Image (cartoon, rainbow, N blue to C red):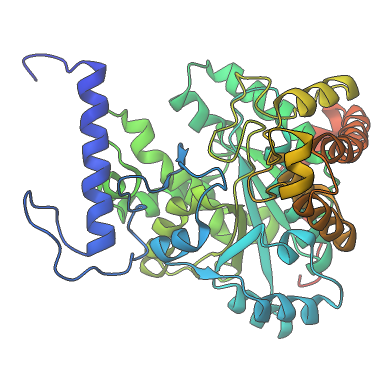
Length: 445
């Protein structure tokens, strides 16, 4: 037993130091030694956490920090995480495979990085199966527009590839990390599931599950959790996630639970006893550390590595270098917001790339790289030609900030209203059906 308990400040500093040492090793391939500079910087491997240097971006599953108004430097993040850029060649291949125009998130680089997507396309082109897996950490009843990004894209993937989908609600994670009761965490999972279902997922091809509910009823799922736990050391999870000796054992063991849905035999009701079906995971890039760990473990327990598609981060209204927070209602557009609230939030809080005066703006133009209203339009305005015209007009000064905000409001108000109408139709019975373990229907049975 320790002779005294560390204060929160010391605990926090220790955790930061541990993270920095881990990041240093990921970037250089060497353990940190005081007063020694690295000799041979090595590219990050699949186990290393993001390397951080003074003034550089910091990304992990719980925190995203950047000092740039443009947001995170994603090209650097690809190098640091060791993933692959989604280039035009891959986008063209996806277009050929599905026989239709790629989603605007692909066309505009919102999904920008991948692991093994070519393998998934090889399988699809050869009539071999794969399935989709994504998730949501239900930390509150209120979801915002940023939370919808992976689900909008996953629904499109489900439609164009006609494949089954599993959606994990990590209510256990939120209980471990937040000041919630188990009942609150599960209640949020059910409420968030209603917003997810409102995105239009096919009930015949979609299984949504709560960890608190499903893991206790599925021995196959739990067996995979235990297999993963056996093959990951405490040292490894400390290195990947920055855990310290004062973190609860629940947090330390949780990554194995997020990893388990990557393996098809975790869902015997869907895939029977097949363990060879590859998984494709669309997610924001901050979730990648979980799946670097998963991909490292997979071959050692006889399973295929999951493939990934990574999205950029959805910016807060106040700017791409700030973080959206459910506790700050002005940091984003929430799915419960009225048309009036959306208008007020965009007009009052959306960070502008415009000039200080109308005269200056007309003369020098606005900066689309930092303007949040323009960033939001890249996510939600479908028409590529119109988006490009708006970019040109704003950059030249022909379009004022107020005009740009008005365009965004006219895009967001019907989008949120339509979502709210669809959610109204999602009854508790519908949620129960989506969350019932059952056979799904798809092409490759």
